[in-house]
Amino acid sequence: MAALANQLIPWQKKYGRHDLPWQNCRDPYAVWLSEIMLQQTQVATAIPYYQRFILQFTDIETLAQASVDDVLSCWSGLGYYSRARNLHRAANVILHEFDGSFPQTRELLQQLPGIGRSTAAAIMVFAYGQREAILDGNVKRVFARYFGIRQYPGETRTLKQLWRLAENSLPDSESADDIRTYTQALMDLGSIVCLRRKPLCQQCPLQQRCIAYGEGRVSQLPIPKPSKPLPEKETIFMIYRNDNKILLKKRPEKGVWGGLWCFPEHEIESRKNTIFSWMQPLKLPQLRHTFTHFKLSIYPCLQDVRVNNTVVSMDMVWVHPEEALRMAIPVPVKKLIQSHLMG
Ligand code: SF4
Image 1: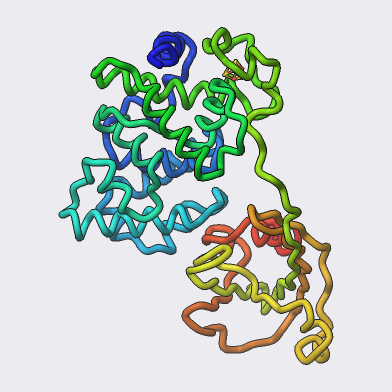
Image 2 (image 1 turned 90 degrees about the vertical axis):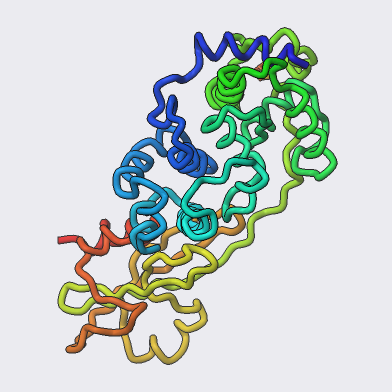
């Protein structure tokens, strides 16, 4: 099994990535932040967010003591906001339950919000040089192809098999440098060579032993998840405008866009009754937004109102559109403000 590591380590040293802002850093906080950002985000997109975040929240204590709103605002635009809320929660657990010192075993790390086995392992490898196996989405794809796995990797049995392969493929050496280079190599290979579509097999150090390549099955592996069409949902965004300010409402912590500021929403059926019978809102063009588990059609309506008292409640504010763009808002709200409410 060491064959994989023997191919990957020299390849990483020569062709891998060496100058990402979080590389060559042993600070577990910085490593943790980068691993969380990279969970569902491409490296190029994550870099400016990472740099901004670490500048604003320099260490675990600063992050723990910041307001969730500030953390979400810094995260705004990166998506999957539960990651930011979990970072904030985990920073508080570290500060209050671990006396501010970062957990130093994978098992302890996995108890923190938002940290699964693979992320915990990657942090242990990069921060402490521990010998742990990773298995993120990219690595699953590489292993499914290299080992020729013929079942969908999301199935429990197949996942167990992949974890076993990941553990057995670790480099034989106990050297911290080797485990770091090997882990980075797997990540690099998945991101820049063994791509989901059109992998660059001609540049791959694993080509000779890769089962998918040898059998001409690269485009068929990994076996995709048996697919179901995404459900469709609809909503109305009511954009109330009062003397050039717009009304934003804070969403509940749990659920879609949790904790972000959004336009008040109405059920699509409500167009037929009460609120719409006395108003004549201007209908703006429809927007579509796709989440991992459903598709949302948004029907934005602009309504000018006259209200003297602009203090509404803790979770509702009237703000100028420019100010709203600096708040933690989801992408469709940002698009609507930029297209229809500026200037
Ligand atoms: S040979 Fe191709 S399919 Fe196999 S691991 Fe390399 S890039 Fe992936």
